[in-house]
Length: 112
Image 1: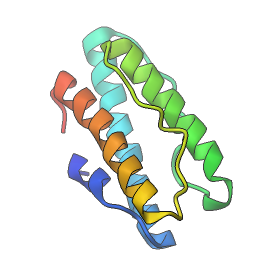
Image 2: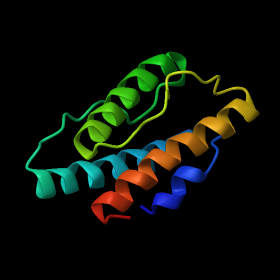
Image 3: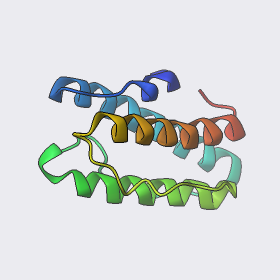
């Protein structure tokens, strides 16, 4: 799945399913590249599918995955724990910040 899929702002449950799958795929690409380049095997967190009734669980697992990859890569991350996914403007800002972290990691590792 292309990295650009993470720029899509989900609105419906179906949108979230598509975004979640793409997101998990991107994390797997990053995890594999980190394993290959650094010999570090990062934990895999249950980030897909996303249960919108317990969205905070996704946010926590996702933040941990980002903290892990940023720690290995020495890159600076954002606080991705705070977003009201029902508020379009907040979600748009969160999606962009989130994408930027994936873009930075992907560029550092040479994956897309």
